[in-house]
Length: 298
Image 1 (cartoon, one colour):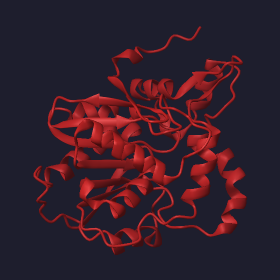
Image 2 (image 1 turned 180 degrees about the vertical axis):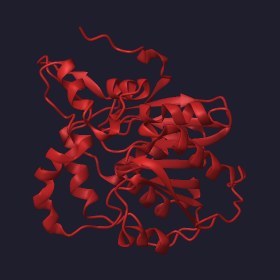
Image 3 (image 1 turned 135 degrees about the vertical axis):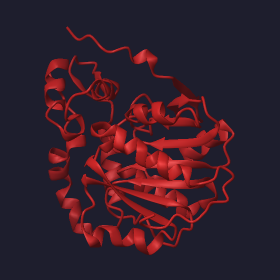
Image 4 (image 1 turned 60 degrees about the vertical axis):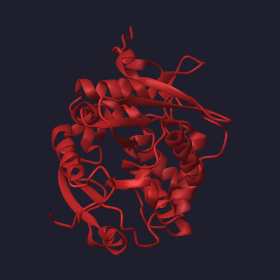
């Protein structure tokens, strides 16, 4: 029988918006605002070790973005503008004018667009192995069915006949390499039993389809940003070539690039090194927003 870990130890809250509910985790031992944004098909729980490592200094918020986790899943409305509107509403609810923002994969592209449109919202921006930061040619639309089958973060969509079958699949994926207690907890927050008795991801196909349709066509970086930025590149991540790194060097004028151990989900497979990289960078950004220079290679 399925015996879940104690998920109730996660400090989840819910913000009621006009047309949906936004679930988020909050750790508020510290005072500096730190917003953590998960990648496609994940939940805010992926940041648990980050929160434990940094919670003494920062007030940490990790939402389940719309279509994910325990946040509402409307039939449509998954464009970047809707995600940004949700995040602005969350910051208003928290009383935050700005925050340090850490964003992974797809949400790193969302955060880059948000920072371009509203740079005043950002004390700093950390991009963790972003997914397709450039606009991609239209012909790649034809490859979406292939991506849906092979991308590790979409293999948990299901359906699976049982929880055990779903866990067996998860144990084979890169993000769950090692199957630590953290990874098991993250897996359990991202999966649910469906009305027909099968199991599958809480992430919904409507969100998958609309996000892919937009993420390929919209560039994440389009103009210069002075915000202090950290680009974290896992050794076995997505961004390994010069042409992939070039847009960040072109548009991010206060950029540090750092390589870290692990794969695309470094915060799950190498959490200590990941957390140290985040902590070291954030210490260089004064809390008053009057930041000192953070140059590549420092």
